[in-house]
Structure formats: structure tokens, C-alpha cells
Amino acid sequence: MLTSTPALGVDPQTPSHEGEEPVSNEKLIGELDFDPTALKEKYDFERDRRIRSDGKTQYVGTSAGRFEAYSRDPWNDAEAPREPLTDHTSVIIAGGGFGGLLLGARLRDAGVTDIRVIETGGDFGGTWYWNRYPGAMCDIEAHIYLPLLEELNYAPKHRYAYAAEMLEISQRIGKEYGLYDKACFHTAITGAQWSEEDNRWHIQTDRNDTLTADYFLLACGRQSLPKLPNLPGIDQFEGHIFHSSRWDYDYTGGTSAGGMSGLANKRVGVVGTGATALQIVPEVAKDAGELLVFQRTPSTVGVRGQQETGPDWVDMSKPGWQRERRVNFQSHVQFGTTAGFVRPEVDLVGDGWTGAFEILAEPETAVSERLGRSPTQDELNELSEINDYRLMNQIRGRVDDIVEDPTTADALKPWYRWWCKRPGWHDDYLGAFNRPNVTLVDTNGQGVERFTKNGVVVDGVEYPLDCLIMATGFESAISYTELTGFDIVGRETTLSQHWANGVRTLHGMSTDKFPNMFFIGGNTQTASAVNAVHLLDEQSQYVAHIVGQVEAQNAQAVEAQPKDVEQWVRIIAESPKNHAMFRFFAQCTPGYYNAEGKAETPADLFIGGRCGDGALAYYSVLQTWMKNKQLNGYSLELG
Image 1 (cartoon, helix red, strand yellow):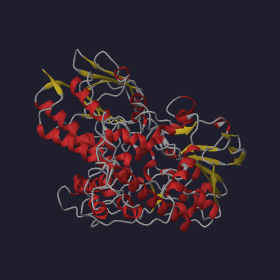
Image 2 (cartoon, helix red, strand yellow; image 1 turned 30 degrees about the vertical axis):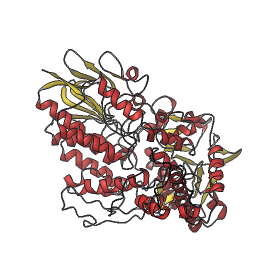
Image 3 (tube, rainbow, N blue to C red; image 1 turned 30 degrees about the horizontal axis):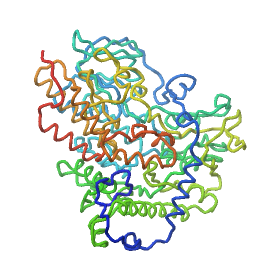
Image 4 (cartoon, one colour; image 1 turned 180 degrees about the vertical axis):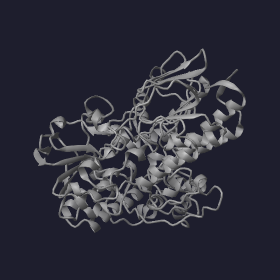
């Protein structure tokens, strides 16, 4: 097949066919109704004017310091007092989101039942505990996104589940798998040390707990730590301000379903135009007296096609239906991003994602038939870029079709390659700008300059506001110890010291010198997955398999071996596709994908340093390894 983004997967070993007669452009790419050279120049111009000297420091986290108040829990703020705990548990899981819940469920399936989940929020849910803003929903079909649907025999209510349903599913999993029994909510781990004397992990928390565990498992997601623009004057703003993941319904009134009467006659601002803002803006627009949307870079906005789904939307009677549907979806992703991958004959999901890949990629056999031979590398690259332009032209055309004001429409058009930012989907976002109470404030790629006591300043103009909503995302591109909020002490070293010269893992989920410790999520040396919950489930099964095998052999400790860790590091680091990915994203518009345009190596990318052959290849590695049942790459310390 032909990849939509050569940097994401075109095989650098494609034959060059030197000496062959070049084919005509029209034979390769067909007739064009646009100028590719002019588009490339436009993309470069828009990228360059968005690059800022402060890079990633233009944002600041809220987990500590003067912005800590922005992290408070608005959903369950009263921390029930309790006595400090001092007991032992077989397994301690850090994190109660989908990752932690899947770990707990898969461990239970493996016969491990003594489990404690420690979670900073007031309940299970993770991302979907925190994100309860109006209109909040997932952007992956619910039937492949929500965890354990087959096990729960649960049919989602909408094609894209709303936040309330995802929180409900989290709670249902917690109850079904007995994970509430020992759960510690509103509790943050502050320290973890491996003890050689008793082969246990010693865990401390901010509730003065001193716990021990045989296994320490980390499921610290990257969508829970809010970030804010690091701008002067933010402390001087006298209006109301909050982060989208800490929505203040006491101020706005209403619920996640709408009815925010508190915003009537208010001048409301939203900073950010990413996935969160696509969902917030249409809802706030219904209730605010006036809404100003401050935009640095527009998102792509494809058709979501939200609708209710009955119990018969998917045939749930077939064992393994959810896994089959997930693999089918990911196969269409691979078709659009990996050279040589054959597209499945059937598209089980049939959404905007898979529809985009039909434009971005086409079977290599079809191209070979047109050319009368296999395409060269240069031809692959050229056709990939042309197909990307075709898709983005459709997306920009949709803006013109919906947005009535030509100036606003022009400002809402994204000028970059489709994969340069997380693709967005919504049925009502663009139409919201046709409302008389909604104004787009385009910042010409520079963002908001500063705060005043009355509002914010853009290009020297002050915009007075009563309320400012920060839809500015999360601290996703940070180190693992920054993500956890504490350092971990293994065998005579801390994790930050151990990884001082680079992350080193086995399969992205364990490392030498840290026995009985595993971590899951889309971290370095795992895989880049459009459907993050599919990734979490594959990893959870891998970890549960190891723990189950170790327990069956009555071993005291399991640890990744240095030579196997080094081999996995080399596989990731030496992948030509990872280096091609870096070259692609380095040319993209600035954002968290490429360290705000400052990425210098593949490891600097948000999705850099992952399995170069894609998520399905990574899952295959894990599944093949588990089938062997020999725990290859790990050593056991027998009791």
C-alpha cells in the first residue's frame, strides 16, 4: 500500500528502479485541481510563523507551585479523613483510570485477587473522572474504546460515548472486579522503594500511609495533569478562570448535558482549539452571552456522525467480538500508515478515521498496475503527499461549506499535513461560529500575549472577559518521573538516575534493576496507538501473564535482564521508520507532537521512540512472547 505520511512508514528499502524511464505525473497521481508547490509553501509559512523561542516552556504545569489551585478536585473535594494504612497487599496499582482498571481486571482473571489501587481522584475513571466539561466524549468509537465491554456484556448508548457513561463504566468495572475493596482515593503516592531484605516494595503516600506490596504496577495516564499557558499577569486576572478538566459548574450552572444559566449575560473566553475545545465551544455557545474563542492553530474538523446506538449496533453474541473489531480498526490505521500493509476487505467501524485512510492510501497493486511496475521510493513519497493534500483540501472545503463569514472561515482552515496534529471530529463546532454571540479571535499563530486584570491581550488588543476557560490540554510530553510525581528507588538506583542517558525498557513495560515493577501506557518504547485503550488492554494482559507465571512458580521476584533490555532499546532506536517519523514531524506545525517545533531527536517527539512497525506489530510481539510461557528476557528469584 501507499502510506499517507512517508515519515510514518514508507519502507526506505523500496527499490529505486534506477535507469527506468520516469512516468508522467498524471499517470502516477492523476489530474490535480490544485498546485502542490503552492500548498507546500503555504504549509511552511504557517508552520514558521507559529514557532516560538520559548518552545515547551510556553506552558506550565499545575501540579505544584502557584498554579496548584487549578488542579483541585471539583467533583469530590471533601477528603474523608481516615487513619493512615500500614498493611501489605500483593499488588499495588498506581492509577485508577482505564489502565489501572484493566490491570486489576486482568490480574483477577489470572487468579491474583489481593489488589490495592491508589488514585489521586475521588473515584475510578482517570481521564473520565476529571473531564466532565459540557459535551465531553471520546473520539474513538465506543464499542472499541470502552474497556471490557464483552466481559461486562454492556452495549454503549452512543457511537461516541459521553463522559458520564465512561465514568459509569469505570465504576462498573471497579465493582465487578472487586477493586473498590482496597482502593485509596484522594491519595497520591509520594515515594516507592524496593527492599532487598524482604523482596517487597515500600510505598508512602500523602495520607501518611506506609504500605508494602509484592508487585508495584504503574498506570499513570498522560491526560490528567492540566497545563496552562505560561503567560505574564495570569495572577492579576480578576475574572473567573478554570481549566476544562476541572469544570466549575458552581459558576456556570448546568451539567455536562448543558443548561449553563450562569453564563447568561457573561463574556466568556475559551483558550485553545484542540480536541477539548471542539466539544466545549458548541455547548458554551448555547448559553454564554458572548463567547470569544482564542485560536493559535486550527484543528482539522471531520464529520463525527454522532448517533445513538441500540443493543444491536454490534453483534455481541460472538466471542471475541470486541478484540476483532479493535484489530480491524487498527488494521485500517496500519493500512494508512505502514508501507506494504494489506487493507482488510471489511471495515467494521466505518468512521471518519477509516474513511480518511481510504483517501490517504491506496493498494500498492493498484499503483503498480497504473505504472506497469512497482513504484519507486520517490514516487511513493510524492503520491503520499498528494493524497494528504487531497484529504486536507476536503477538510478545508468543509469549513467553507459550513462557516458563513469568509474571514472566519479562512482563519479556521488548517494548513498542515493530516497527521501533524491529532485529527479532530465534531458535527457542531464549525457551525457554532455562525452564531451572532460567537467570535473567533485568531492570534496569527502566536497565542495569547498576556493577562490583564480585566481580560487577555492579543496583538496589543485587550479583550475584556468575565470568565476564561483554559482548554489547553495536559502535561503529556514530560518525563516519566514528572508524570508520576515521585522518583522510584530500585536496586541501588533511582529511576531518574537509571534513565539519565535515555529510557531503557523491555517491551516498554519493565526495566532492569527494578524487580516486580511494571508500567503501562503509551510511553516510550511501546507503540503509538490511535485507540489508546486497545494498547492498555494488550499491555495489561502481558503484565497479568507475568505476575500469574511468577506466582505459579512461587518466585519472590521477577526482573528484566540488562542484555534483553539493551536489545529492545536497540530495536527501537535503530528503526529506520522511527527516524523517518522524526523527519516528518520535524516539519510539522508546532504542537505537543513535536515539542512545539523544537524536537531534535526521535525521542523528543510525543509519539517518538515507539515501535516503528506500528501498534499491531507491537501487539504481535507481546502475544508471541506470552504464548511461549518461558518469561524470556526475565530472571526469577526463587524463594
